[in-house]
Amino acid sequence: MKTIIANWKANPTTLEDALDLFDFYLSEISKYKNISLIVCPPFVFIEELVNKLAANGDINNLRLGAQDLFWEKAGPYTGSPSSTLGQPKVLLGEVSVDMLKNFNISHALVGHSDRRYKMAETDEMINKKIKAALAANIIPVLLVGERNKNDERAVVLEQQLTADLDSLAAEQISKILITYEPVWAISTTPGAEPDTPESTLEAVEIINEFLSKTYNLKPTTCLYGGSVNENNVVDFLKHLEISGAVIGGASLRKGEFAEMLGRVNNINR
Ligand code: PGA
Image (cartoon, rainbow, N blue to C red; front, top):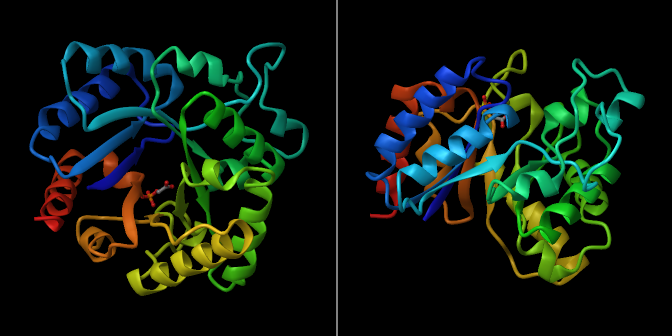
């Protein structure tokens, strides 16, 4: 079973288009029994999509996730707290973990590079978000990875994991879906190119070495994200160590996304 996370980011712009794309996912998903599909839409569409999913009965391999969450239950948090630290492009009212719980969200992205670098989110905030998600039984999808191709990858991964997982127990860490997503590989980064599967396997090894020496955890699998498309998805996911993919741009293109799901579904046959 492979996990595919569709990260819609700030797309589409209308509820009508969001429902249309989700309808397409619903019509396709029954074909892909070997895939667990998690759809992460913008917050404003979650309620409608949750209702639509419920109205479609018992679909157990499609769940909804959030692209982010806020660790406080409620209160005076009009803008992102990161706005005081950096220069975010937009100001958001925070959406708390307790609000998301009402919608039966199964997963939440935490530490996406859009938030780390465009919203100046710190590792300390990411750590609080992971703890809040786990406390609410929401599975955190923690995204880590270096910003530039020539950054010292092992150093960056170790620094991010040390801070993001601070004071968590090994048993809690084993619930997190760790995703290697180098920023230079994300399709919207200028000059982006996907990582190679061989290099991603090395990243998984770095992550596992860290988890073993720091938390005494056995080797785990990771997800990969960054310009995953119909031509490369199998090359990554055919490896046992790579248990899934976070897909941005291609998840918005119906034909391409369906093709990718079909190819991934056949891996386990
Ligand atoms: P991409 O986005 O698939 O468009 O590269 C991945 C992500 O940012 O999560």
